[in-house]
Image (cartoon, rainbow, N blue to C red; front, side, top):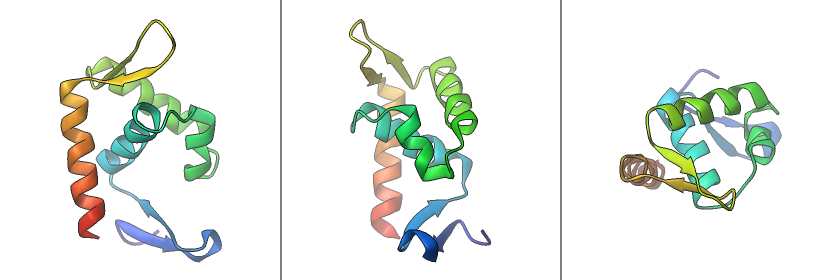
Length: 93
């Protein structure tokens, strides 16, 4: 990809964001708000489970999210700030 929001014509115009923080926010949103699994999210990144797993571990480490007792991902207040930034950036595109 050559731009931060390159369009991949093989995926019918789905947008991919190269920005590392946008990648993190994408994963965070889909885990905490959409309830997707990391395998489902990996499909957005050419089935790169390692990429998604590394970001999940990182976001846990910086306290953006955690798993509650029922295995549901919860965004912390700091994580919610990034979710809001993600939504603001995707609306502006």
